[in-house]
Length: 341
Image (cartoon, rainbow, N blue to C red; front, side, top):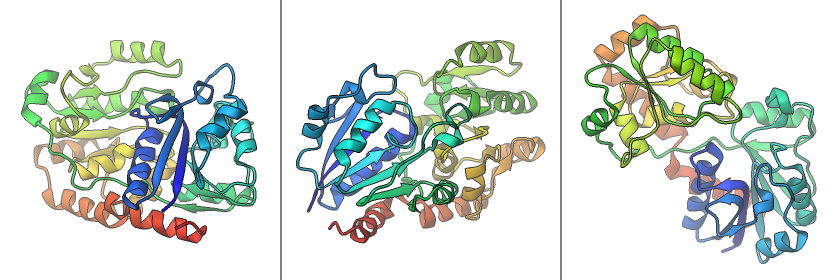
Protein backbone atom coordinates (compact mmCIF):
# COMPACT_ATOMS: atom_id res chain seq x y z
CA UNK A 1 0.00 0.00 0.00
CA UNK A 2 1.03 3.59 -0.58
CA UNK A 3 2.05 6.55 1.54
CA UNK A 4 -0.13 9.57 0.72
CA UNK A 5 0.01 13.16 1.90
CA UNK A 6 -3.13 15.28 2.17
CA UNK A 7 -2.58 19.06 2.12
CA UNK A 8 -4.97 21.93 2.82
CA UNK A 9 -5.22 25.47 4.20
CA UNK A 10 -6.77 24.08 7.39
CA UNK A 11 -7.96 20.72 8.66
CA UNK A 12 -9.93 19.46 11.61
CA UNK A 13 -12.55 22.22 11.59
CA UNK A 14 -16.28 22.33 10.94
CA UNK A 15 -15.99 23.78 7.42
CA UNK A 16 -16.98 21.57 4.50
CA UNK A 17 -13.42 21.13 3.19
CA UNK A 18 -12.17 19.91 6.58
CA UNK A 19 -15.10 17.56 6.97
CA UNK A 20 -14.75 16.01 3.52
CA UNK A 21 -10.96 15.81 3.85
CA UNK A 22 -11.40 13.80 7.04
CA UNK A 23 -13.73 11.42 5.20
CA UNK A 24 -11.15 10.92 2.45
CA UNK A 25 -8.43 10.33 5.03
CA UNK A 26 -10.56 7.73 6.78
CA UNK A 27 -11.48 5.98 3.54
CA UNK A 28 -7.89 5.91 2.27
CA UNK A 29 -6.69 4.56 5.61
CA UNK A 30 -9.37 1.84 5.47
CA UNK A 31 -7.88 0.76 2.13
CA UNK A 32 -4.54 0.21 3.87
CA UNK A 33 -2.80 3.41 2.77
CA UNK A 34 -0.80 5.56 5.17
CA UNK A 35 -1.95 9.19 5.13
CA UNK A 36 0.03 12.15 6.45
CA UNK A 37 -2.05 15.29 6.86
CA UNK A 38 -0.45 18.70 6.29
CA UNK A 39 -2.15 22.05 6.91
CA UNK A 40 -1.54 25.66 7.74
CA UNK A 41 -4.02 25.68 10.61
CA UNK A 42 -6.08 23.33 12.73
CA UNK A 43 -5.41 19.66 13.42
CA UNK A 44 -2.86 17.93 11.20
CA UNK A 45 0.14 15.64 11.46
CA UNK A 46 2.29 18.49 10.14
CA UNK A 47 1.32 22.14 10.65
CA UNK A 48 3.04 24.66 8.36
CA UNK A 49 1.68 28.08 9.27
CA UNK A 50 2.59 29.45 5.85
CA UNK A 51 -0.14 27.33 4.24
CA UNK A 52 -2.92 29.02 6.19
CA UNK A 53 -5.42 31.41 4.66
CA UNK A 54 -4.01 34.91 5.02
CA UNK A 55 -0.54 33.79 6.12
CA UNK A 56 2.00 36.58 5.74
CA UNK A 57 4.64 34.32 4.22
CA UNK A 58 4.42 30.93 2.49
CA UNK A 59 6.20 27.92 3.97
CA UNK A 60 9.81 27.53 2.94
CA UNK A 61 10.41 25.17 0.06
CA UNK A 62 12.53 23.00 2.35
CA UNK A 63 9.79 22.64 4.96
CA UNK A 64 7.21 21.86 2.29
CA UNK A 65 9.44 19.22 0.69
CA UNK A 66 10.13 17.70 4.11
CA UNK A 67 6.40 17.54 4.91
CA UNK A 68 5.71 15.67 1.67
CA UNK A 69 8.83 13.50 1.77
CA UNK A 70 8.20 9.85 1.05
CA UNK A 71 4.65 10.32 -0.16
CA UNK A 72 3.84 8.56 -3.43
CA UNK A 73 0.78 10.72 -4.06
CA UNK A 74 -0.27 14.14 -2.74
CA UNK A 75 -3.94 15.02 -2.36
CA UNK A 76 -4.46 18.80 -2.44
CA UNK A 77 -7.70 19.87 -0.75
CA UNK A 78 -8.84 23.24 -2.17
CA UNK A 79 -5.46 24.91 -1.64
CA UNK A 80 -5.04 25.23 -5.42
CA UNK A 81 -8.76 25.75 -6.03
CA UNK A 82 -9.42 29.06 -4.33
CA UNK A 83 -6.60 31.66 -4.41
CA UNK A 84 -6.74 32.40 -0.68
CA UNK A 85 -2.96 32.04 -0.25
CA UNK A 86 -1.41 32.49 -3.67
CA UNK A 87 2.20 32.31 -2.47
CA UNK A 88 1.57 28.99 -0.71
CA UNK A 89 -0.24 27.64 -3.77
CA UNK A 90 2.65 28.56 -6.04
CA UNK A 91 5.18 26.99 -3.68
CA UNK A 92 3.11 23.82 -3.67
CA UNK A 93 2.92 23.85 -7.46
CA UNK A 94 6.71 24.01 -7.61
CA UNK A 95 7.19 21.17 -5.13
CA UNK A 96 4.64 18.99 -6.94
CA UNK A 97 6.08 19.56 -10.42
CA UNK A 98 6.83 16.11 -11.80
CA UNK A 99 5.06 14.34 -8.91
CA UNK A 100 1.66 12.61 -9.02
CA UNK A 101 -1.08 14.58 -7.30
CA UNK A 102 -4.85 14.73 -6.98
CA UNK A 103 -6.38 18.20 -6.74
CA UNK A 104 -9.71 17.92 -4.94
CA UNK A 105 -11.68 21.04 -5.85
CA UNK A 106 -14.48 22.17 -3.54
CA UNK A 107 -14.70 25.73 -4.93
CA UNK A 108 -13.26 27.62 -7.90
CA UNK A 109 -12.31 31.32 -8.07
CA UNK A 110 -14.78 32.36 -10.77
CA UNK A 111 -17.59 31.01 -8.58
CA UNK A 112 -16.91 33.77 -6.06
CA UNK A 113 -17.47 37.30 -7.44
CA UNK A 114 -14.60 38.87 -5.49
CA UNK A 115 -12.16 36.20 -6.73
CA UNK A 116 -13.42 35.79 -10.29
CA UNK A 117 -10.52 37.72 -11.81
CA UNK A 118 -7.88 35.42 -10.33
CA UNK A 119 -6.23 32.34 -11.82
CA UNK A 120 -7.87 28.95 -11.61
CA UNK A 121 -6.22 25.55 -11.11
CA UNK A 122 -3.29 24.58 -13.27
CA UNK A 123 -2.72 21.18 -14.82
CA UNK A 124 0.50 19.33 -15.54
CA UNK A 125 1.51 15.79 -16.38
CA UNK A 126 0.73 13.47 -13.48
CA UNK A 127 -1.79 15.87 -11.92
CA UNK A 128 -5.40 14.70 -11.67
CA UNK A 129 -8.43 16.82 -10.87
CA UNK A 130 -11.54 15.85 -8.92
CA UNK A 131 -14.58 18.08 -8.44
CA UNK A 132 -17.45 17.66 -6.00
CA UNK A 133 -20.09 18.59 -8.56
CA UNK A 134 -20.64 18.44 -12.31
CA UNK A 135 -20.90 22.20 -12.67
CA UNK A 136 -17.28 22.65 -11.60
CA UNK A 137 -16.18 19.75 -13.78
CA UNK A 138 -17.77 21.37 -16.83
CA UNK A 139 -16.34 24.78 -16.00
CA UNK A 140 -12.85 23.33 -15.66
CA UNK A 141 -13.25 21.55 -19.00
CA UNK A 142 -14.13 24.89 -20.63
CA UNK A 143 -10.76 26.13 -19.35
CA UNK A 144 -8.80 23.14 -20.62
CA UNK A 145 -8.60 21.16 -17.35
CA UNK A 146 -9.99 17.61 -17.40
CA UNK A 147 -11.59 16.43 -14.17
CA UNK A 148 -13.86 13.73 -12.78
CA UNK A 149 -16.75 14.29 -10.36
CA UNK A 150 -16.88 12.56 -6.98
CA UNK A 151 -19.90 13.62 -4.95
CA UNK A 152 -19.48 14.26 -1.24
CA UNK A 153 -20.27 11.25 0.94
CA UNK A 154 -22.37 10.99 4.10
CA UNK A 155 -22.95 8.61 6.98
CA UNK A 156 -26.44 7.36 6.24
CA UNK A 157 -26.81 5.97 9.78
CA UNK A 158 -25.58 8.89 11.92
CA UNK A 159 -25.73 8.77 15.72
CA UNK A 160 -29.15 9.54 17.13
CA UNK A 161 -29.08 12.80 19.02
CA UNK A 162 -30.97 13.64 22.20
CA UNK A 163 -33.97 15.63 21.01
CA UNK A 164 -35.64 16.53 24.29
CA UNK A 165 -32.51 17.42 26.27
CA UNK A 166 -31.22 19.57 23.42
CA UNK A 167 -34.52 21.42 22.99
CA UNK A 168 -34.44 22.17 26.71
CA UNK A 169 -30.86 23.44 26.43
CA UNK A 170 -31.81 25.68 23.51
CA UNK A 171 -34.93 26.89 25.31
CA UNK A 172 -37.39 26.31 22.51
CA UNK A 173 -40.25 24.60 24.34
CA UNK A 174 -42.88 23.21 21.98
CA UNK A 175 -42.29 25.79 19.24
CA UNK A 176 -41.08 24.92 15.76
CA UNK A 177 -37.26 24.91 15.65
CA UNK A 178 -35.56 25.59 12.32
CA UNK A 179 -31.88 24.65 12.09
CA UNK A 180 -29.41 26.79 10.12
CA UNK A 181 -26.47 24.36 10.29
CA UNK A 182 -23.83 26.67 8.90
CA UNK A 183 -21.64 29.68 9.40
CA UNK A 184 -23.12 33.10 8.71
CA UNK A 185 -21.78 34.61 5.49
CA UNK A 186 -23.25 36.94 2.88
CA UNK A 187 -23.84 34.09 0.42
CA UNK A 188 -25.74 32.09 3.06
CA UNK A 189 -28.74 34.43 2.59
CA UNK A 190 -29.60 34.69 6.26
CA UNK A 191 -32.38 37.10 5.27
CA UNK A 192 -34.18 34.25 3.52
CA UNK A 193 -33.93 31.99 6.56
CA UNK A 194 -35.22 34.72 8.87
CA UNK A 195 -38.14 35.54 6.56
CA UNK A 196 -39.22 31.90 6.50
CA UNK A 197 -39.02 31.61 10.28
CA UNK A 198 -41.02 34.81 10.70
CA UNK A 199 -43.72 33.36 8.44
CA UNK A 200 -43.74 30.07 10.39
CA UNK A 201 -43.48 31.72 13.84
CA UNK A 202 -40.48 29.43 14.24
CA UNK A 203 -37.30 29.79 16.28
CA UNK A 204 -34.19 30.03 14.06
CA UNK A 205 -31.11 28.24 15.43
CA UNK A 206 -27.86 29.38 13.78
CA UNK A 207 -24.99 27.05 14.63
CA UNK A 208 -21.99 28.83 13.12
CA UNK A 209 -20.39 32.23 13.70
CA UNK A 210 -20.35 35.21 11.37
CA UNK A 211 -17.19 35.26 9.25
CA UNK A 212 -15.50 37.17 6.41
CA UNK A 213 -16.59 40.59 7.66
CA UNK A 214 -20.27 39.64 7.89
CA UNK A 215 -20.48 40.37 11.63
CA UNK A 216 -22.12 43.83 11.52
CA UNK A 217 -24.75 42.71 9.01
CA UNK A 218 -25.34 39.52 10.99
CA UNK A 219 -25.83 41.44 14.24
CA UNK A 220 -28.26 43.83 12.57
CA UNK A 221 -30.34 41.04 11.01
CA UNK A 222 -30.56 39.12 14.28
CA UNK A 223 -31.49 42.27 16.23
CA UNK A 224 -34.22 43.20 13.75
CA UNK A 225 -35.63 39.69 13.30
CA UNK A 226 -39.25 39.17 14.36
CA UNK A 227 -38.38 35.49 14.77
CA UNK A 228 -36.52 34.40 17.89
CA UNK A 229 -32.92 33.44 17.17
CA UNK A 230 -30.61 31.03 19.00
CA UNK A 231 -26.87 31.04 18.41
CA UNK A 232 -24.30 28.24 18.67
CA UNK A 233 -24.27 24.77 20.16
CA UNK A 234 -24.84 24.60 23.92
CA UNK A 235 -21.95 23.03 25.79
CA UNK A 236 -22.06 19.25 25.66
CA UNK A 237 -24.27 19.02 22.58
CA UNK A 238 -23.27 17.73 19.15
CA UNK A 239 -24.34 18.34 15.57
CA UNK A 240 -26.38 15.14 15.82
CA UNK A 241 -28.24 16.57 18.84
CA UNK A 242 -28.93 19.71 16.81
CA UNK A 243 -30.52 17.79 13.97
CA UNK A 244 -32.50 15.64 16.42
CA UNK A 245 -33.83 18.72 18.19
CA UNK A 246 -34.89 20.49 15.00
CA UNK A 247 -38.23 20.26 13.23
CA UNK A 248 -36.89 21.70 9.99
CA UNK A 249 -33.53 22.39 8.33
CA UNK A 250 -33.12 25.65 6.42
CA UNK A 251 -30.59 25.93 3.58
CA UNK A 252 -31.04 29.44 2.24
CA UNK A 253 -27.68 29.88 0.48
CA UNK A 254 -27.40 31.49 -2.92
CA UNK A 255 -24.15 29.63 -3.57
CA UNK A 256 -22.43 26.51 -2.18
CA UNK A 257 -19.74 24.32 -3.67
CA UNK A 258 -21.88 21.45 -2.42
CA UNK A 259 -23.86 22.26 0.73
CA UNK A 260 -23.46 19.44 3.22
CA UNK A 261 -26.54 20.36 5.33
CA UNK A 262 -28.68 19.35 2.34
CA UNK A 263 -27.65 15.71 2.69
CA UNK A 264 -27.30 15.91 6.46
CA UNK A 265 -30.98 16.86 6.65
CA UNK A 266 -31.74 13.70 4.68
CA UNK A 267 -29.56 11.35 6.74
CA UNK A 268 -31.01 12.79 9.97
CA UNK A 269 -34.54 12.41 8.55
CA UNK A 270 -35.53 16.06 8.67
CA UNK A 271 -37.46 18.12 6.07
CA UNK A 272 -35.41 20.72 4.20
CA UNK A 273 -36.40 24.23 3.12
CA UNK A 274 -34.05 25.05 0.25
CA UNK A 275 -33.14 28.04 -1.86
CA UNK A 276 -32.27 26.59 -5.31
CA UNK A 277 -28.60 27.49 -5.62
CA UNK A 278 -26.98 25.93 -8.74
CA UNK A 279 -25.39 22.83 -7.21
CA UNK A 280 -28.47 22.09 -5.09
CA UNK A 281 -30.32 21.53 -8.35
CA UNK A 282 -27.79 18.80 -9.24
CA UNK A 283 -28.39 17.20 -5.85
CA UNK A 284 -32.18 17.43 -6.09
CA UNK A 285 -32.06 15.83 -9.55
CA UNK A 286 -31.18 12.53 -7.88
CA UNK A 287 -34.86 12.38 -6.89
CA UNK A 288 -35.02 14.01 -3.47
CA UNK A 289 -38.12 15.85 -2.31
CA UNK A 290 -37.34 19.22 -0.71
CA UNK A 291 -39.40 22.32 0.03
CA UNK A 292 -38.77 25.76 -1.39
CA UNK A 293 -38.14 28.62 1.04
CA UNK A 294 -41.47 30.16 -0.02
CA UNK A 295 -43.49 26.93 0.48
CA UNK A 296 -44.64 28.19 3.87
CA UNK A 297 -48.02 26.42 3.98
CA UNK A 298 -46.55 23.08 2.84
CA UNK A 299 -43.69 23.32 5.34
CA UNK A 300 -46.04 24.19 8.20
CA UNK A 301 -48.28 21.25 7.29
CA UNK A 302 -45.33 18.86 7.14
CA UNK A 303 -44.02 20.01 10.53
CA UNK A 304 -47.48 19.37 12.02
CA UNK A 305 -47.90 16.01 10.26
CA UNK A 306 -44.50 14.62 9.15
CA UNK A 307 -44.61 12.17 6.24
CA UNK A 308 -42.34 9.29 7.10
CA UNK A 309 -42.60 7.89 3.57
CA UNK A 310 -41.04 11.06 2.11
CA UNK A 311 -38.21 11.06 4.66
CA UNK A 312 -37.55 7.36 4.06
CA UNK A 313 -37.51 7.77 0.28
CA UNK A 314 -35.02 10.62 0.58
CA UNK A 315 -32.82 8.43 2.79
CA UNK A 316 -32.94 5.56 0.29
CA UNK A 317 -31.63 7.91 -2.42
CA UNK A 318 -28.82 9.06 -0.12
CA UNK A 319 -27.85 5.45 0.59
CA UNK A 320 -27.70 4.77 -3.13
CA UNK A 321 -25.86 7.85 -4.39
CA UNK A 322 -24.11 9.61 -1.46
CA UNK A 323 -23.20 6.82 0.94
CA UNK A 324 -20.02 7.20 2.96
CA UNK A 325 -19.77 3.41 3.04
CA UNK A 326 -19.08 3.44 -0.71
CA UNK A 327 -16.30 6.06 -0.53
CA UNK A 328 -13.41 3.57 -0.12
CA UNK A 329 -14.54 1.71 -3.24
CA UNK A 330 -14.88 4.94 -5.22
CA UNK A 331 -11.44 6.12 -4.14
CA UNK A 332 -9.99 2.72 -4.99
CA UNK A 333 -11.35 3.07 -8.53
CA UNK A 334 -9.88 6.58 -8.74
CA UNK A 335 -6.46 5.45 -7.56
CA UNK A 336 -6.50 2.50 -9.95
CA UNK A 337 -7.29 4.88 -12.81
CA UNK A 338 -4.13 6.88 -12.11
CA UNK A 339 -1.96 3.81 -11.59
CA UNK A 340 -1.70 3.76 -7.79
CA UNK A 341 -2.75 0.69 -5.83
